[in-house]
Each structure stands twice: as C-alpha cells, then as structure tokens.
Length: 374
Ligand code: GDD
Image 1 (cartoon, protein in one colour):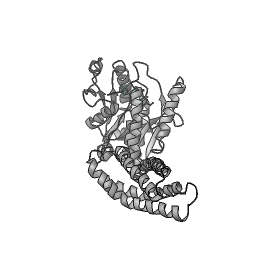
Image 2 (image 1 turned 120 degrees about the vertical axis):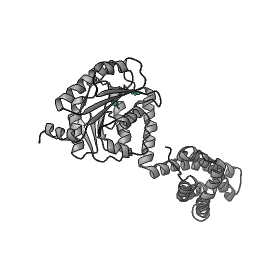
Image 3 (image 1 turned 90 degrees about the vertical axis):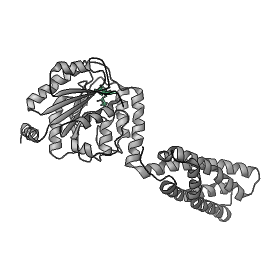
Image 4 (image 1 turned 135 degrees about the horizontal axis):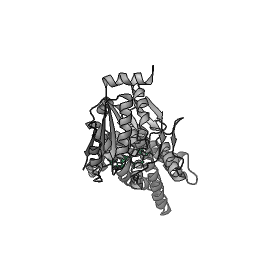
C-alpha cells in the first residue's frame, strides 16, 4: 500500500488541525503557511491551521489575514500566557480529529506530518518528530552548551518515558485522546512530555526529522523557561512514581532528622545526662524539624491545611514509629551495642525501624490527599 493511498483514506474520515504556538513570529508565518499549503495540495488534505498567539502585536494577525487562506486562523490570547497553555488552548479549539503541534520558526519540516498521520492510522497513540532516532539530526552548528543542555534534559526525562526525543515540540495525536486527558498542568515548554506521561502514551512512534535552526526571529527559550523544566519534571515524577517520590523525600527529611537527633543527644550526653534522657531529647527535637520539613516539602500538597492540627496528627501518627524507634534503640544500647558510640548507632537503627511506621501514618492519615494540586 502506498503512503498516498493511506493518507487519502484518512482524509475521508478525518481532517488535521495544526496548532502553532506563536510569540513574535510575524516574519515566519508566511513561510510556514506556504509550506503547509504545499503539503495540503500535495496530499489533498483537509487541514486547518491555528496560530495560538500570545498577543505579539508584531503584525502576526495581519500576516495570517494577508495569506487569504480560509483554513488558517489566528487566536490572540491575553491570559495564561506561555507556550504550553497556548498549545492546550489550541487543541481545545481544534475542529479536526487529528492534532499536530509544531513550531512556527520552520525548524520542524512539514514533510514529516504525513508520516506522523500514518503512524497514528496504524495504531500509534502518539507520533513525535525526533532528532535522536536513526535518520534524524540537528543543525551542525549546535554548540557544546546547547547539545549538553538538550542531552541532560532528555536524560532527566528517561525514567518517565522511553521516547528518544521527548523534548520535541513537533508531534501528533488524536483529539479524542487529548479530550480524555485529565490533570494536564504543564509548566514551561515540554508539552509533548506532559502529554506522553499524563496520558500514559505507551505506543509512541518517532519519526526522524532534520531539525534546522530558525532563520528569522529569536528563540524564546530563556533561562527562566529552562528552570521551569525542573519544576515540571518534579510534577511528572510525582505523577508517575507518586509513592516512591514521597518515600524518597520522606527519607531525605528523615536523614536530616538523624543528624539533628544525633547532635542533640550527643550534646545531652556531653552534659552528663542519662542515656534515656539523651535519646528522648534527640527524638523530641528531630520530631519538630521533621514535621516542618515534611509539611513544607514532602507533602507540600497538604500545606494549605491547619498546621496545628497537622502537628498533633503528625505526633499522634508518629507515636507508633517513635515507640518502635525508642524501644529498639534502648534495647540495642543496653543489650548489644554497649561500646563506644553504641548509643549513636542504636539510635540510628531505631530511627530506621520506626521510619516505615512514620511514613505510612503520615502519608495515609495526617497528610492524606484530598485533592491533587501538584
Ligand atoms: N503562544 C506562545 N507563547 N508561543 C510561544 C511562547 C509563548 O510564551 N514562547 C515560544 N512560543 C512559540 C514560538 O513562537 C515558536 O513558534 C515555538 O513556540 C517554539 O519556541 P522557540 O522559542 O522557537 O523554541 P526553541 O526553538 O528554542 O525550542 C525548540 O526546540 C525545543 C527542543 O530543543 C522548540 O521546538 C521546542 O518546542 C522544543 O522543545
């Protein structure tokens, strides 16, 4: 079966909405429209193009109007600015069952679109233009910094998806899948990564593309946008590996509590106090610091709730863990670890034994989720 025949089949049942986020791209709009028009005629596509513009006021509106294409529209947005929200708004406004997202700056080759559509027609849930599969490439003049930047960003996303180039802003999916998606709240640029993770896209096709640097205008990818990627990654990790992430953060806070615990009990020991008082003092102080840190970081989604009540709950829920902690540490220090630093080592083992009880009590009782903000 020839590619053209497949595509013609799709055209009968469906059309394609190409969503292009724009900010100050007036210079590029006529060139991209010319390319898309060529594609439209070559494949006899039913096509609409939506420029989602964040109030550029640079002649973008006029550029779309001047094209005279009745299949091209520009939507000027004045609220909730940013690349990702603009794309999501475009997807909502789209009229056709297949959605394509691409940049306006001609860095994404329109000729890859038919292959993406064929991928979806053959059962893929998501098709992405990829620089990092055989046949794909980036411009030769990418400096070391840009290359490293892209490589690190991609590597950080590796546990979230096997897709080789999830940083790409060139992709296609079905509108029905997008409409069914819940809880999308991307920050920054990586809208494809958001969709792949939140929609649980398993069957993702990567279409090799030659990514070329923009010829006109400037990239809007500032350092601030790049830092937002870290925030975005944290959200996605929490989404994908919720309990592992909570446990990890809880353990890090717990580790800080160990330091506090040891410092306090060592100080009390130096002051000549009895071992049971040293242990109790260490536990008491680390309890407070652990609460504050867990409330601020580990279970930050519950920060809006009453802190006093949470602290009472934290203490209550931690009692079982503390009892285990204290009993184990006391027993070890009396019976087994009676030598030098025996008290400190006993305390650490006690902390580890009690930690699991603390975590479960806090995660599922004190800081249980009522709604998801992150
Ligand atoms: N509406 C809107 N609002 N559009 C925006 C905004 C914004 O705040 N910021 C950027 N855009 C548009 C640009 O006008 C362009 O069409 C597209 O989003 C990509 O922005 P660029 O600033 O050109 O991004 P880039 O070239 O640095 O990044 C490219 O490579 C990344 C991977 O390295 C893009 O393809 C990204 O999508 C991709 O993730």
